[in-house]
Image (cartoon, rainbow, N blue to C red):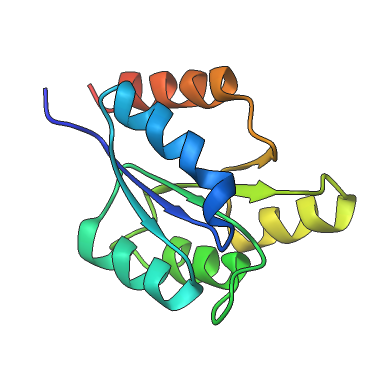
Length: 125
């Protein structure tokens, strides 16, 4: 079995260190970026199994990146989950409109994240 690739795009380094470590411990290959343009380029280069992305990135924001990827046939199947500090109706609407596959409210429940990853793994088998 090949390692699954996950890209995390979040401007808050401290917030994603524990997620990064947790994912590595569970056998996932993780690439971390801190702004929108780097996130978009990383996804296009790596074609990951999952993208975890913060909406409020500098440069392109998470919603813009999600839209660019989801409406491009080369990347439309990549699962994109927004990492949000808020679960407001407005943010949920923006995530849905951009094509996001879901929202995880931060701080992230690592067991919930692992459940999502297991679902992705089953779909890809």
